[in-house]
Length: 330
Ligand code: ADP
Ligand code: MG
Image (cartoon, rainbow, N blue to C red; front, side, top):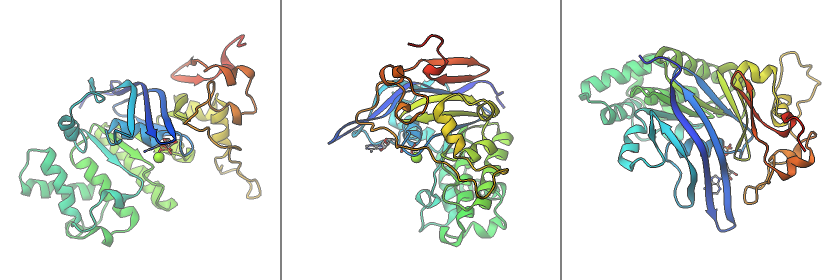
């Protein structure tokens, strides 16, 4: 097993736009981040902030056109996925890179027994025969906590509950031993107790297999429970990045403050209301020149409307993109 601490995926200055009739939707504007083996990187932000476009660009699942990569690199194990051939990418997708979406039904075929669906990926990506693939599929069902895997092997998706279906999707993703597992809102469609079980499962698997996980969520509660490191996205930009405990103890960007205020806490009285951030995200057809959160921030200064703040290195892996921490900012 390779050790932790190696950048498995490195995204550098990635910008993605959609060319629409209304104009150019600038969905991602200069995003950079990395993820290492053995860690879970959470990407958090309100709906529309560019989380899904980020991972779909990595997976080459964005239709181009209308989508277009305007700049940047996506280095996976040293190879640039921006310029990689379609055949090579098809091998990586579902092989070295696994993906789990919000709704398990979108990734399962309703007319095919689930055992066969797990075997399919194994047969494509691994050099094994059918008997070995079946054995591995049943092992995977066991690993993700599905009782009586031999019987379940022969059932259809509709015979499974929502939580069990998401376990099957995880089994499919893991069957090919990915190095990177991308989870886009994997528990949003599930009820709370099942959510916790699925997050625990993802955590266990990350530790056991020493894989890298990217977990997208709009829920900071999920982040606290699961992530090692967090990036906060807004309007297609990364506004803050920090190890998870640092982000909760010492958040620096006004947008992060807003997100944290809208998080339910155990010590909260039932008559205390959760505040969601007032206002709406900017129009990405015409994104703001400066700090994209300025129009919604109580702390905005004149410069926030005029010039993009620099990304400031606060040490210990904590970064914030804000004029608030620039000494002598105009
Ligand atoms: P999130 O996952 O954070 O909720 P997305 O990554 O799905 O947000 O979307 C980011 C932005 O990109 C949104 O403003 C969305 O409207 C826009 N977008 C995504 N796909 C398309 C598309 N095919 N055409 C035009 N705009 C798109
Ligand atoms: Mg999304």
